[in-house]
Image (spheres, rainbow, N blue to C red):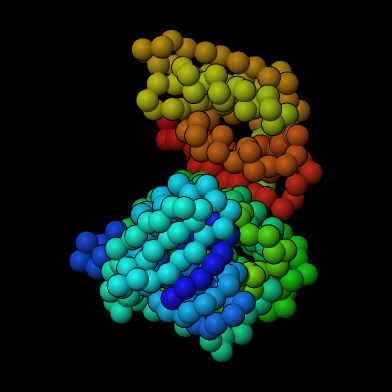
Length: 369
């Protein structure tokens, strides 16, 4: 293999691919990037990485003098590229190792036998659907924090993706709170539903943030998801399971409702967090007839606070407790300046929506005290 390419293009690809590498000592090649060149002339080098659950392939334009393939440790390769100041560099294989040269510098990186590098998922022949990149990225970002960090129950440790003609819906829940984002789209022409493990969904979001294409192609089967855009293809396993029938737990009516400014509520929660101690509990108190919306928090170590903010209230009086983090996590996602808090009653869920953002719904279970 012998190629010439630009430092920035191959460094950006190497940094993106490095995140997908594995850490298994029994299979050292998983910590490597596979560089593969197929033809001679103006072509491309494919950078590949996998951790057996997910994989990525990125094509980087280059001038090819000789084809070939080599596997090198991802961290060593990316650090080497970072240290190079020249705009152009050459990569070649000498005595089985990778040599990187640029503007008077020469680095030899010891290679690992590439024959052990696992094949990435086979997506040949699978019919994909075209989806706006921004909408897919925003959908994952809007709900991923509500998924469980544990895979003990895989369906709760995943982001549920429901694609229908005309809409993309993403949902995540850890059984204590639930986030749903539904976005109209003209891109999807067929229906599909997937459970993407949280760590793979976050990795996909990271990739989507760093590519330029407006549209991505998504294809999937019972075991694997593939997302392609331009020079990048990302594959990951999907969960073979059933997402909870969450529509049934979203209240259809509310006993108490409050409309408040999102920033006022966020500031109230920030102050409550200081005084709530390790438990991070906050009490919300709504008295519609007296036009009072307040929050209280206390801890033996710090003290206690009580704050009141302006609110449009209706319904019954209510005192109810929540985990502060569960209330605050959704606020950056809501695009409206004002939010509606819909309370179904003591011991029942709270639903948060933006006044002018019907696409997002967030549900939180109260604390049992």
